[in-house]
Length: 574
Image (cartoon, rainbow, N blue to C red; front, side):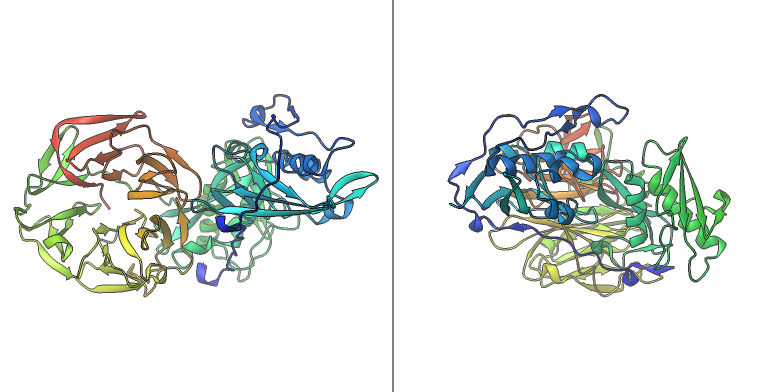
């Protein structure tokens, strides 16, 4: 077995630059609809909305050539042949369309972008707002508000027509185009104890070679933000056999790996098969997987049954009428052994998955208390200046941190041992919220520095063999939801997304589902936007409380106020 610490690090490609570098525009791309024609209907569910762009026309100007080239990025057929027809023959051989993908905001398309052309018509520059960037490994990183990508194109005439002789690698696409030509799939890795599968969400170009691309990335290892937090059964150097292609026939995906060194045991073969099978079966056209290693078929009987998520059965916990309580349907029931919290300045309750432990802050965040289900006495397990609300992982370790943070997260184990976990990215920032993923591999951290907008960092939690936290979090956190101008609260809403109370530029605070690696989705309209949010494992059971203690429940794509219920600080188990 190999840990992610032994895997090659994947370098993120950063193309975005700040607004201050924006070029002033002296001409604009026409705002008419992009030229092209629609592809005939096919069995591909995305084909109906795909536009097949036209190539360059005789006499096209420099601006029309660049505009056509960018629009042609939506045409992925024949290895982006239409887009390459706007390039010189030499540049068509060099340009790499999938080096990165920059995604425009929802209200922006390529036609609305301004550009500037030099007097000799040989250089065109353009500045584009972006909300996210996908790197060459398919990892989506959100961009902060007002982030822009500066593009420069060199042009020359070839056979009497303008062609692009130098173009930035990668694509610039609208949000609609991105959703049309790219698909989101999760690579599956293991928790360090092999108890659960952990998804690593990536974006792949929609094509017949998608399964091959997925397996190549799976064998390359997890994204940098998961370093040390997950493990893979595939040893270093594992790769597809000489054919280098995953084939699909009658719903059966055939994956052939070359010889592995050292030769895997039957258990290791089964784990490799589990990773590959669980990853590929997310593709609708694949119903089963046949794996061979070094020419030998790996029997399905060797594959273990590993859970893909931690089951969350318990109802959410709140503080109501000065007691720790649980919400059941439309009622609030006091936890039987809850102490009277009147005058305790209590907040932020949490409960473990097995209901054996409750935790909360008291004295305005100065003390972290733990209440066992078989005891009526809540013990102080940690004291600080101003602690953030706790989150409990599947090992019953309680996580918190100082709000005025110096680059450290604190975890309190079941035996009261305190683990101080280095988090350099938090140094000098205000910690606003932290939530441990239910499989225990990732920490979602909400923080702010000065007057800047709050940001979410998702980062891996390395552990020792006993499940205790290591001395430091992964050193390459993934920024999530950076396009929001305000974020009030977050909660895990499944294994690949968060629920957030957040605000987009020019909008009001509303509830959103935010993919760990992908754009946000608003969850309807809620009066006042809410003060705190909590989500269940399925991402559909979501609660929001207002500052006045009103509780709203999200079910069947609609918000409903729970009548005659007043409480604060809701949290599902975990």
